[in-house]
Amino acid sequence: MEIEKNKRIIIIITILGIIGLISWLVLSFVFIKTTVSPVPSDSLITIDGGKGNTGTTTKYLLVGNHTIKGTKSGYGDGIKNISVSYGHNNFTITLTSLKQKFIDALPYNTDKWSAYYSADIDSITVIINSEPYEENKAEATNWLKSLGVDLNRDIVIFGAVAGVGPETTGP
Image 1: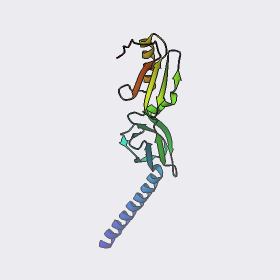
Image 2: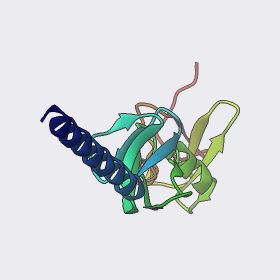
Image 3: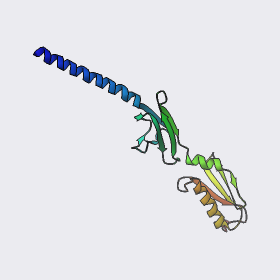
């Protein structure tokens, strides 16, 4: 009787071990350890709209297609569609600096105003070329804002060609 009981226990343990091994094998083919590395490295990363993590993120993902998103203040969101499979499970997402977006757009010239970037002092200079000064300054300001320039964060210097703009008095 005791031998029969021990045989049953051994058979049950063996069956559970086999089931566990099969489950592990199946899951290891379905879920892949996946790493997403953002640039810059302290960006917030979300995968398929889930909870975000800052910096390099490692999760077990189902084999197949996923969407990763990187966000960081001062940068445009990075969105990338990825396909996770064996041997293809490390991804990088690069965010573009909003500042780089407007730097790439400069210099910019119109009849009304011109804008230039100076790397030496990390600033934008806007020169108003014609009247009406305030209207043209507002147009230039709106254009810069559309590129992500933040007048509270970025250095923007306004000036005008001779004879244009507010009257100034000498010393």
